[in-house]
Length: 305
Length: 223
Image (cartoon, rainbow over all chains, first blue to last red; front, side, top):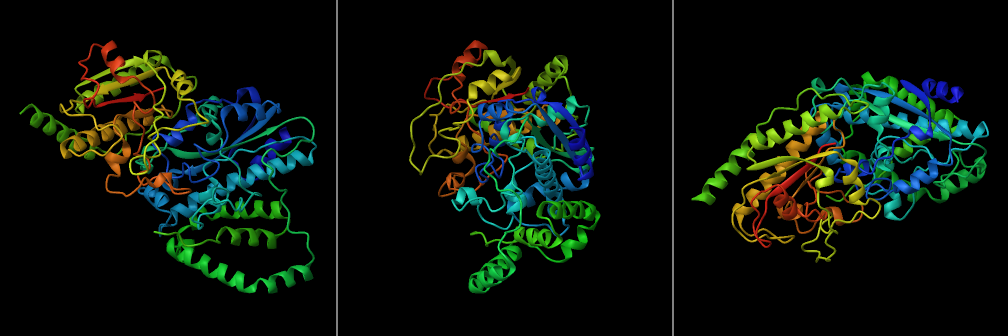
């Protein structure tokens, strides 16, 4: 387990501990915090309440594991509690200061750490039925898509990165963190940077004995196994569809207010993006794969206003 | 004249809520939770409710909250919303209430009019009163949240669709994949969640209007 804890730190976590599964706090109130008052993503992401998993289902899944790696990624208060950031996030648009994308980078980092920890767990011959990340995956992975793929009925677009959040599964993340001695501030929409010390995103990967089945049915991360020639033929055959898809993606990106200037504004968080992309390389097996995966997260369709 | 005074008081409440400063420095979440701090915080929220215009407010134990079954009557699309009828198939509300220790229950003066229930609020003065109640609930819940009670939950009488989205042709949260139009504001009513508000008010010795009359009450389950 120490190997996994050290791996979490090397992948970008600021703190990581190993704890027994019995110390995971499941609380029936947590999912209600997503629904009352209603979070902007509640019901719009398949992992978020009122959808997702019940506490009994999560308890059953966790019972098949012994220990868990619990880690945190800290977010500067100037990003997570930036003035007006809640309104930007709710609107689905990107602010010109790059704070929404900077915050997104931290969430993506958590998703990537969870997946890599799960991958390592299985490589070591242990089981990890599910990993738990932070926040909703739709905003981080499918930001430029109008609908979550699962809700739309076409299936998850990024099963190799998507995970339910700890809180959507009823885990009292803040109390678990406080129990570890981590300083955690509640951050809401009316926060300003001066009112909180920092933000914290957390993830959890339970580990159990033996090789087990992936509870979520997610695919193992890998590039398609088709040869280069077959892929080139397939690409040529679907060229008109790809062109249409690219045009729609550009329209969605433009609608969200994305401009190249935002990259400059995000430079204070370049370290986080770099770490995330290094993790993607580990997940996909190559830098080409990492670039392709990043590009796929920018695909989308304009939303109906 | 009495109604006029009530409306003035509601207007003052709303003005004080809208003029509120950003939250004070957030308190970090504590472990283990301190029951004395919780009690003191609950009392401060009760005092805040009274200072911001509530006619009555009390700190109660969650075990004192009388719960019945949630109303199941199906409503037409013109009237229904994500919060009415309240449907949380994976999350029994009674289990959530049991997990809380203390709550603050408060009441605003209500005009002596018929309770609109889940339907539209025709009387603009009554609509203003319900909006004040919802804003006060949001304010108090927010206060509890920043005191480190990260699971604080606010409920307020009145149907959020009639109060916040009266001008919308439908509740957008009921459309597949669409988010609520008023995130972080919309919340279910106590009645929709099965709380027997009149029984609770009687237990506290508060004046209780007749069953069909408007009763402006809210509750913040603190921790």
